[in-house]
Length: 618
Image 1 (cartoon, rainbow, N blue to C red):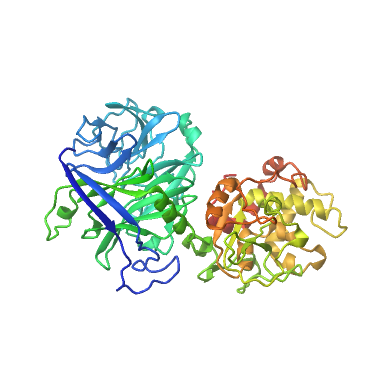
Image 2: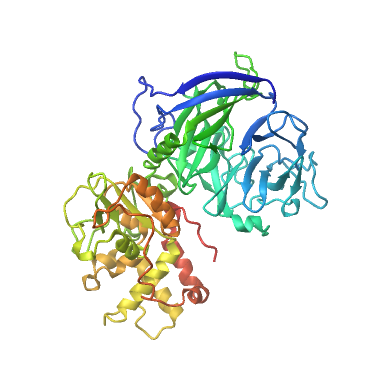
């Protein structure tokens, strides 16, 4: 990678005035992405010439790069600006290689693909003895990169099998029998987990991205098998996953957010570009924001972003490989291939943080996700048929009870003097702690005042854990009421729980509307999606109890909430308060009532799909 070319220019991407406005919805047509133009100015510094056969660059701190080499199959380029000796990986690991720094290990390479072809073949590279070399089963392997060579991790065996045992993997080319991982991989460490992003072949010619993750400590310790989460599609707001043309996504952590850089094409318009998107969980993403245009060839993008978003002093550094070798030749375009180069672009850290902040404000409501809208059906852009609606055969929004005149929650003042934000309260999601943090006693809140809701936020929780906690609360309070309950009997504890779940699955939110003497008690076990439907409008921010303080840091950048003394709130929560109420041994219940737990998981199916939690294996 020698031969430097120096230039000095400013890249300005302005909104295109001649394009029709796009529908403001997540399932908008492919050629109508929302909020994809920006006037952010990136400074273009220089470009270094690269070999036309090298691709899939990753920039590492200190000026070194990793890339798939033009050399023999299995070769990975590793160097600092001049071509260094290649290192060899086992099998097809170099084909889609990703590089990242893993705490406690160092620079780790991940790579490898599978094939649906019923052929055994030994591939170039260094495979330890006894390791499966069948391309159909090779999957993704891990290597520790050292100066001039690599050491296989996990005994050189696959850390993700490419066979049909990969849960949730989207693979339309092999009809779901294999997970090929034939596109570029990307990985990063974020909030204690190693996040892996791979190609999702929706069908032939339709490429998207999917995501899984694993505890980084388990990875560092070499735990086998690794407890990977189920694969889930990456959904960019206002972009159709089923008609996607996202070739891959380079994902890195920046402050409290994840950043995806992706080459995206729009064949209908014969346009392409490099786009950015932002997320706080790796599942739901902001709209794609254009970073720079790219030449379009066939159905592909000629320019690719390099993975490895770097922060150097006060700047964010992005590298772009221009004129990736082989793309124009593959599609026999009228324009001949050009020399490939690696360009360096910078943006001030403050400007990039503002870009992320503005994009995160548009992530919004999980009911706009395709995976959520297909569980029981949708009623509108931000409204779905809930589990409770499906039980009772209703098509309208759920009825509200308990004599309250507004959705369940409260308004909170903002430091900028704008209209208050609405906190949608979902019981058993840390709501008591949140109310103490907000500093307004229940009797003094503003929830019955007739403000119009302009901005809103809520907190969700792992569905089964919330349900068991809610069951404990209902059980504890009901035992003192004297009314009939399915568990005020001589039945065993597992039988009581099963009767409780059966009643809930039979009556749904009829338990709220038809039992006035029991007040709001049944609210504690209604689905979390049911509460989102009470709001009557899109929810702007959804936080998770499991990462609440980290999520609050992101929220407070957009919504500077005030406490009763008109002081801006800080993301540090008070101690938990109601930890005793309804306390019983849920671990024993999970073991002694498997039928009740399975029945509860069926009731909670929509919450798992919409909120992005992994369904526990019983």
